[in-house]
Length: 277
Image 1: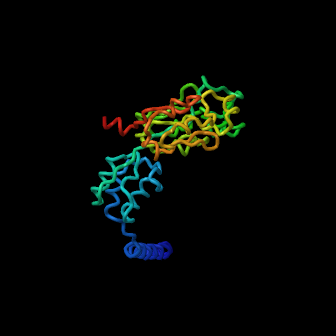
Image 2: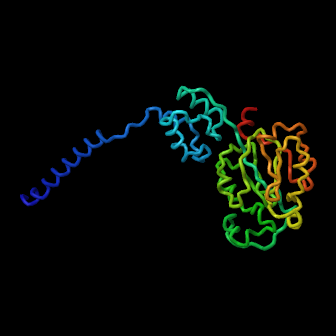
Image 3: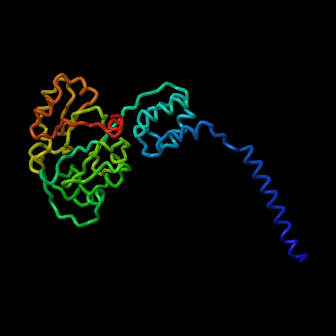
């Protein structure tokens, strides 16, 4: 019995000493957290999409509390409602959020293009791209396996006729799909815009015509007729400068003069605008 006590007592004493040291250390070395952090974090939707430019909602909340001047309108998925809550909690002026929606710059479905090979590998865009750039004859277009659809937290992307489409009534503009697409043909556009280029093919016109009837052939008709100078053909494909597009004096003239119809006029209202209605 004496031998057991001789072994146990030192261990208990050492444990007590360590516990006291840890308690003291936790008091003196504790990092004080801004009391506003939990409240600010609660205002954010928790999508952790990174659209705000920070490492998830925690990172954005920390910046709002610790860095004066951090804008309260960076949470696109949360839209104006989140910005209003943040401005109230932080006691700053409300800042309007520029709501965005995802746009897929490819309309080369199975009716406008064709496959060059029969793909029987893993059902993934990223995997298919490793095999000769995908199964489609256009190596710039949508690969059609739905990696973006699988990643979308809102289930706002679906596959139809071999390519991905966006259900804008469900899109919150989180941007997760833009990071997921291996072709990089998905971008976020302000939901007040109307004109969209539905092609990403950078080949010359003759080659593009061979692989897709919807492809931009770089004829520059849109560039010539645009009164605002909002469209430029870059790397053989039309690109819209949306900062100039709202100033257009003859809206829709680009789509009317597009040789292949790859420039389309569409209602880009996203989920937030539908909710407002």
